[in-house]
Image 1 (cartoon, rainbow, N blue to C red):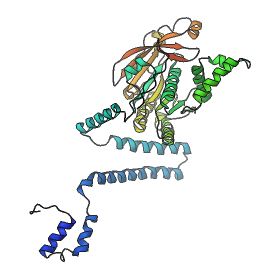
Image 2 (cartoon, rainbow, N blue to C red):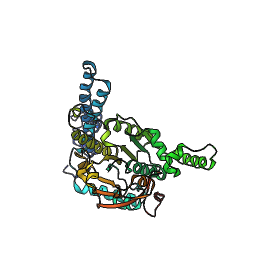
Image 3 (spheres, rainbow, N blue to C red):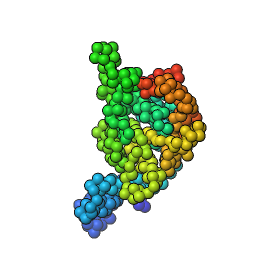
Length: 400
């Protein structure tokens, strides 16, 4: 373009007419049709996305072709084939998320824009945790984070997870998915009612029909809990692939998912047939990794409960990362690892089961902040945790 004029369909046509070459170029109609046949450079990012999308679809077809063949030719059970198909799809998604570099400046610009949107009230910050000191340490529940809460049996990890889930759902209308592999859904529901009414489980089960005050309290508790978007799945044979699929379904149903609780990790089955032949440590490592993949894929915090080894009781010491049972890759995959520890656990059990006691919540790993210990008060009668001098529910979130 020696004339340094804008180059578009009108200027090109005029130039061809002026030079007498419009006929050799194919005529006015042909020249006018050319823009529709040539991709525009400024749309290159759209074209790249189209190619990537077609590539992923091709991988899905190739992956599921093998599963379809197995449906006709193998004696595998339907559930195993469903797991295999879901696992292959998850692998494609994980590979797609990790592929390609992004320049540091672009990443930081995106993060600054996110912080600006939060400051202006255009975007919700991480949901605050029920306990102020713990919230200060962790900065709330972050989307895509894997949080491990571990203890020896009977110290209260299930109760703490339910306290956290209830408070988030109550104050944020948070959609919570609870996968209870140990307790039935009825037990989980009654624990929530016990905590809400501050009535022990035993008292709830033995209320006299004439005790109107107690029935009034139960009515209030039921009214407060009834419409909360807390969903409980108590199937004991669930694996991560099934949890992932059910969480995605719940997320689509509500257009959001705010917290996933898994109680507890060592009771989960492995999704792959290969892992069934591996030792339990390798299986737990796979489960841990897949929980982290799920958290990132669904952009939801996952709170997974875990057992600590008996060595903690024998040694009479504070737990550490190596005490996670069949720890494998748990400590590597987790963004946060917390231990519930009662330093006075060796005292008389009868007193322990009745009295409100101080429990250490040890933040042993914290990818985004400090490692420290937060003191909580544990009421074993009502299955409730609080912070000393604080009733255990966060202030309502600020209105945007």
